[in-house]
Picture 1 (cartoon, one colour):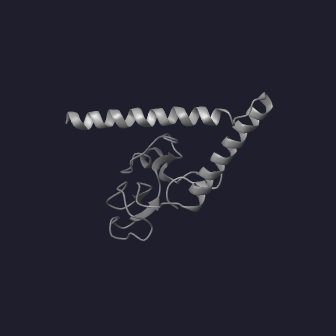
Picture 2 (cartoon, rainbow, N blue to C red):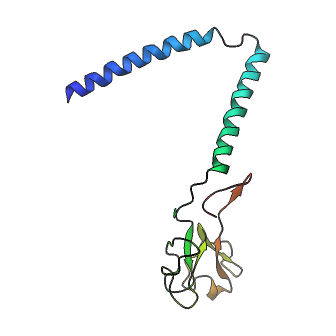
Picture 3 (spheres, one colour):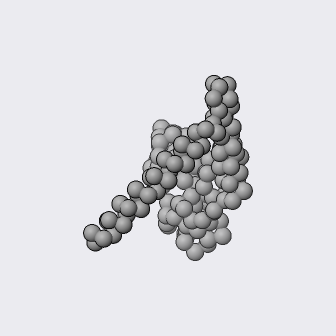
Length: 143
């Protein structure tokens, strides 16, 4: 066990030295005037932001991450696999809907979190799913 810690320490020392060497070499190439320093920061920020949004927009990894839950039926609020899942949500009105949470609409409990089972209906409202949010064309959660 001590040998592993010694190897990690040696590797960290070597990598730290290489990092310092690279940092000092690149320091000579960096901008000297304040205007070009600002432009460098803006360029790096713009490039990294574009890459992140490009990846999020073009390579969605949609999977059962809790965005789909049962609406109505016997298993209200239980996670399900998506709109084609007709086995998890059972009951007369059971269906799998895209929702990250549920909230009361209308009535005295309007805007409060609900769990079904009549916690909105007895006050004159209805428990509704909150759909996945979309920001700058990028959907958070599964479609």
